[in-house]
Image (cartoon, rainbow, N blue to C red; front, side, top):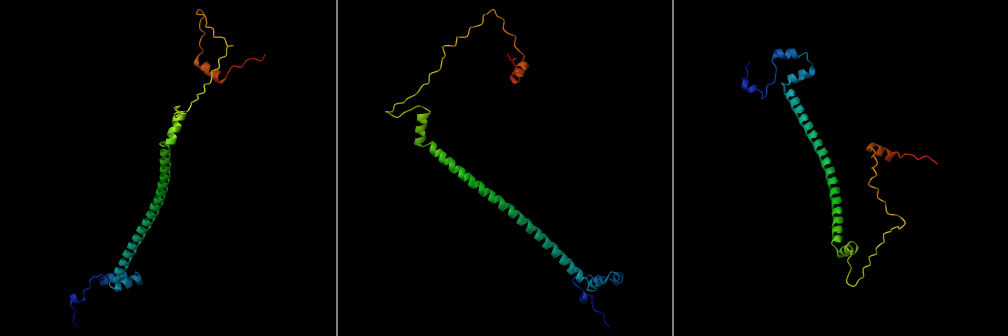
Length: 171
């Protein structure tokens, strides 16, 4: 029997185990034996499958993160649109107030009410209320200069009497 040349039987990835390792692996179970008999191609397939599953898991996690971020940005956009609508309405109100403040009607109202102006030919009546002076009240009599001033109460007593006025006995 002729022996084949080693280059003719070489595999691209030679993952086969030596004969002594195969005997030791015989007790590991039928699945491992099947993988070892296949020359390691099962292990390579299993590794590639695990790698693909990890990549798919990473892609799904990234996609979920993008969906969450998109929802957050959409909420922010809706809130900003409401803010823009509120500010637009407020701006419209302020523009109306400015237009009224600069109008001739408002200027005339301020001139008549606050400044007392009138148009040519109009008569302005300014009512003046007399101040009430009662002649029955005598003018206060100044104290004689020889009288000594009354002793001042301490501040705490004035506060005490402010909150708790002294009671007067009933007659």
